[in-house]
Amino acid sequence: MAYAALSSLLYTLEQLFKPNQSFVCRSYTQHVQSLYQNLSALQDLLDDTTKDTETLKVIEMRIRNVVYKAEYKVDLCLRRIILADREDKREKAYTSFYEELLKVKGQVYFLHKEVMQINVKKHGSKSAESATTTYSPEKSTIEGNTIFGMEDDFNIILDRVTAQTDELTVIPIFGMGGIGKTTLARKIYDDSSICSRFDKHAWVTISEEYNQRQMLLEVASSITGSKQEMSDDELMEIVYRGLKGRRFLIVIDDIWSTEAWDQMQRIFPNDDNKSRILLTTRLKYVADYVNCPDFPPHSKSFLSLEDSWNLFTEKLFKKITVLLF
Image 1 (cartoon, rainbow, N blue to C red):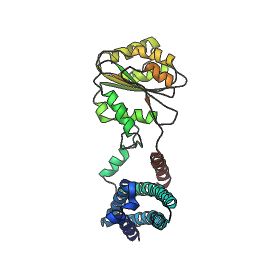
Image 2: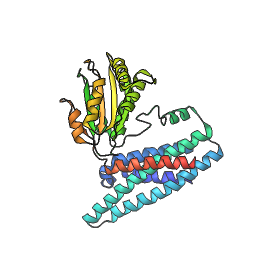
Image 3: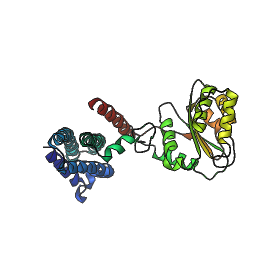
Image 4: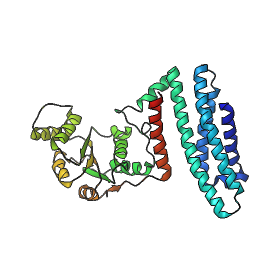
């Protein structure tokens, strides 16, 4: 039974918290605690007697399949640690345990999310509304689109965006393609504290082939809501007037050349009112060209192995959910 499988794995993890077994846990306590919490939450779901039989069977089957395999892997790794008769074998066993622990942690985390979705799909509730809003493209939030390994980057950029510098400040983020620059910028742009801080907001994607008219249309539409046919000069004027005297945040995503920036910057007034331009680029020389002395370009670094795994399993779970439901 699923409940028995959960209880057995929880008992195994509880042994790791005991003082005389602390050598097994080493620096992995945080991951073990996180895994324990998610398993406990699954057990609480099984304790809920309000579920109908059909829903309970579906939930039990999913939990049983995942938890049995997870317990086998955890027990096997722990046995190797305990039986290791040499330091090199013990270190290898620790590494193996850590890798399996991260996998199991990710599997159980997404199992919990999947079970919650099954529950919502079967019954419907207020939680269903909150579950779907996090995936809305019009409201991308920190919770809805998890940032793995970007907490430090997020806090650095957030501090720069909210700094007390009065003058219009350009904040460049640079790094190779696919490293997470746009995701980081989107998190800043959608953060509730940022939304309330600025009067006007606009997001424009440039890409390698710079199209001035398309850029002007996107900014004008965001700032004024206007989609009328106008010349480029008229669009530049309407954008400038729409921003003049107002505190604004503009995100310029994926800019490739200094020439594109030279053409764009003319439409952004500097009224010394703490307006900000957040810019992403793959090219360091572009970031160096646009940056302000007080804020050097921010280099977006690679994810750690753990964060890479978490991101992979998050995306994989979403795809599986789409196929299943």
